[in-house]
Image 1 (cartoon, rainbow, N blue to C red):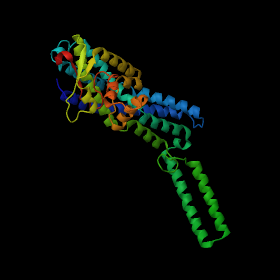
Image 2: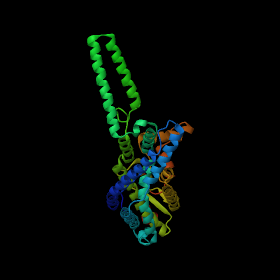
Image 3: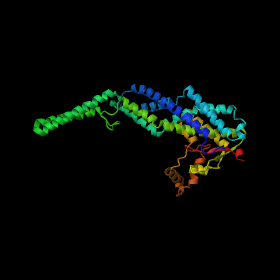
Image 4: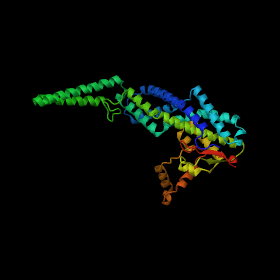
Length: 371
């Protein structure tokens, strides 16, 4: 039974990461086009309730559009990749995996898993880091007149302010030379004219730091940046979690096909092994527990419910800050911090199959194989 980085899995990750990133990029741009068309139908408004309702509608539209299926070619590639991963995980268990490895169960699981890759990727738009930025930008567009302008309009505004500033500086030079009441009055008139112009054509908290805040092109670029930030890295992380999950699903399906009720968590226990995975090595995972996990995870994905999907298959945050906060939270009722082992026990009670974190190398081994 392999442990550590599994070459077959790493090859599938390398093969599917770029197509997933390309699909998400295309889906995000389709979403932007549809959102922009919808936005053009709404006028600028100061009604907070109305703006909030439109923003919510647009965010739901964005989520729905980004969740679109892959092209037929990419979908076929994802399904084939999923089948190789599930089959590889089943066969890696030895005699357990060979019994029904090529049956309908593998094919059905592979078709579903092929669709799930895009669904898992689309969940990122619901993360606070992306959704909060998108919400702020949509609100800005709906409440700021200058956001509706073309780039040319913004350039004209910038030039207008620059010309008035140059004229003001010329009048101030004249006032310093002449020192007359007439020259002072001219300076005050120009200062007032500049203030009025700036108030009319600029807004507070400039997004791009230039006069007039953002225009349509700037708004579109910022929203696209919010949606596509770290797309390559995130797509690889999603593909990594997907691929190692399917390898372990193969082991689970092999165990289930021969009525093996228990799997064992195994990992290399080397210098790369995390604290949690070092603790989980040798722990029991029941088949019934895995069934509940898979049902809940797949239901969450199909519904586009990020909280439900991640709640069924959460990843543990092993940073010192997160672990200490969890120890403090668990032990608050008894006046002392909980042990790290208790934190790990509580997390493990909520999960089933690996992976338990990104780049997790823990695998599930049917107990028959262990014996």
